[in-house]
Image (cartoon, rainbow, N blue to C red):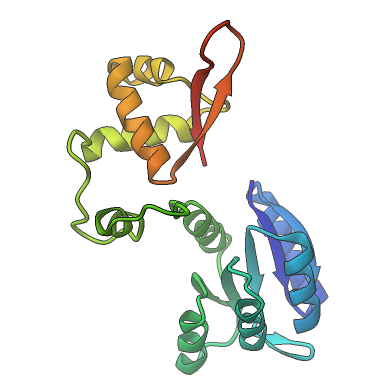
Length: 215
């Protein structure tokens, strides 16, 4: 579930967008109608994503984007606006908007943007190499490590995405028909690249079991 802040000055439109977002299984943690409210709520609520209109009370979406970045907020932003001129689009993207959706729009376009933006691999705090960075950026031709094959990686990733709970390497391997060691290798790659995260099971004596789940 993605925690979303909606910044939209039209209350009726904001409620419609809230309904679309919640129908897609996400949580709207706040609604703001002005630049200042948007900045304040972004700081206090720390949402995963901001849906931002361009025309706001007390300023524009561009001004709020500038204020967010100036305050050190790196929260992903998706523009959701009727502003359709090229200059505005270029400004928003240059300031780090992850997507730009022009009103009116289809619900599928909005939910697709949310899934795409929040489903990107997370950047590690340190230890980036050019190869890892290229893969995180999704650059064409970015090489996978030796022993990691694209098709199998997709199967392991899909298995985690479909799971309601964290899974062990043995459980993942059993589901897709590979050994525990093979599943472990792919799960560790997903963990390293920020596409999975780790839980531990302390149900038995000795070393805790490593469990993997989708980030």
